[in-house]
Amino acid sequence: VIEAVAGKKIHGTGAIPGGVNKVLDQATVDRFVKGPDPMNIDYMVQWAEGAIDFFVDYHANHPDLIDKTAAFPASSLSLVREDGAMDLYHGKLRAVDADGNRILDDVDYHDYLQYIAEGVKSWTYMKFPYLLHLGPDKGWYRVGPLARMHTADYIPTPLANEAFEAFMQYNKGVPSPSSMHMHWARLIEVLHAAEVMRDLLADPDLVKENRMTKGERQPEGIGVIEAPRGTLIHHYRVGDNDLIEMANLIVSTTHNNEAMNRAVELVAKDQLSGHAVISEAMTNAVEVAIRAYDPCLSCATHALGQMPLIITLEDQQGRILDQKIKDP
Image 1 (tube, rainbow, N blue to C red):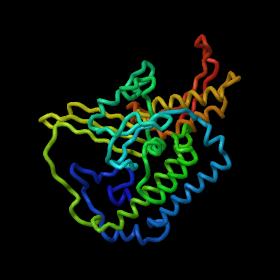
Image 2: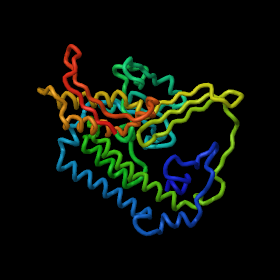
Image 3: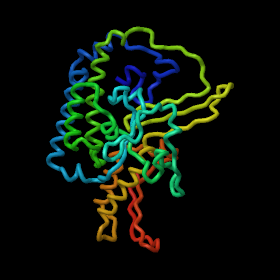
């Protein structure tokens, strides 16, 4: 689908100011609707349902792994639609605390600087976003699939909403503390996306030629979407010479920075208890905890080159007791 609408699967070139540079023709739509398995949308909806069933079955057989790995209470932030439904492209910013109580009540994302600040630390290039009115200690939050489950009132497609209700029922209606539930939420979103694509493929407007809109040139623009990794904020100011004078990006991995650090800390304490060496089990557990957040560290830090995993164990005097390096 990405290749069809954006020209290529990775880093598509279809989006341009005001719209997209091509439209789907009827033959392409028919291929996605009537094509052979697995290249049709009905198959993909069934596949997504099966993926959720697989996860639920795995969860039933490995509850401790899924429920207790890097589990800690956290607030959640995402966009929601005007009626409270999960929305990936429009809506207001909503945040709830670890008990599900509103701590940011459907505010206009154009005013994000009034609500979100970014803390800095001396030991990392990544920043630490937090809600201003709560401060850096209490105002940090998660974003991403799990956060979207916690902030939304419902999902606006029937099959995904059914899976959403089962997910929330398992967690007794309150936000889940488990980082591994990120995968459960991600699969529910895959089903939602497949359902939405099926609806769009049935819409006759999809093959109409006009895919552009026009507007007045603006000196400043703020855009917020729910990327797969979580809430993505882009803010630009452009001068009369069309050169960018100011750019501020808060990407999903930056939003999740504090949560990822806490996940690693929990895994380290669990795996190192009573041990003075770094085991393979620990390096694997750290990677499992980090991957749950699907981080793009190069996006969040503008780092250059390879990014190996380096784990160093020091004593209270700062002497290195052990070190493990996983270098790609």
